[in-house]
Image 1: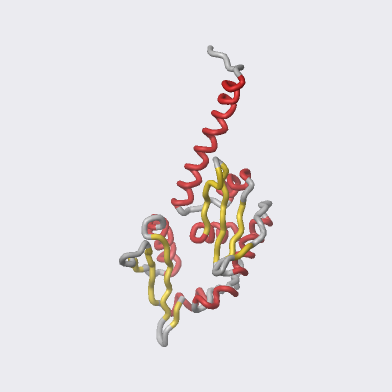
Image 2: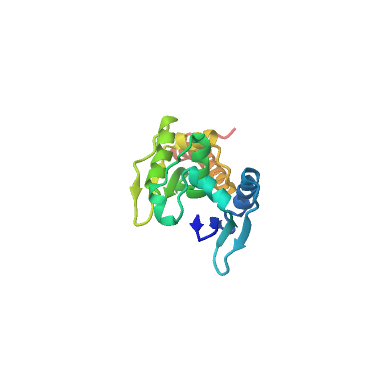
Length: 200
C-alpha cells in the first residue's frame, strides 16, 4: 500500500499471463466480496506485469489494522495482528509468492520466497505445526526463502493446503504425471536390461 495526502492506493501485482486466471478469477472477486470494491486492471506496456489497483482509505485502514504496513520499506517487519486461519494463510502466500517445480528427474520441490523474514518465518511455523519438514530459511540480496523437498510432503501439501493458483496446479499435475510414468516404466526397463522379462 502507498499513501498520499488524502488517499491510499492498494496494488496487487503478478505476471500478466501466468497469473491472469488467478488474479482475475479469484483475487478480484474475493476483494469485491470482502470490501465491496472492484479492483481495476492495468497491463503494463512492454512488461509482463499485471496490476490490480484501487484507491481507498477505508480499505487501506482495515488492512493496516490487520497488520499490513504502508510502504514497501516496512515489509521486513510484516506480521499478522489478527487471528488467522493458518491453512488459508499458507495457501494465499504460496499462491502469490511460492512455486513448485521439478528439481531433477521426476522429483518435485516447493519454494516459498518473500521479502519479509517475519512473515515467512510465520508461514514456516504453520507448516511445522502440521507435520511438514521445511528447510531452514536462507536469504539473497532482496528476499528470504525456504523449501519443502520431501516428495511425500510435496504431495501432502497439495492435498492439505489446496493451492488455488492454476499455474501451480498445472505444474504440479504435469510433474506428477511424469513421476508416475517413470515409476511405472522403470521396473520394466530394469527387467529388460537384466534379460528376465517374458513375452506373454
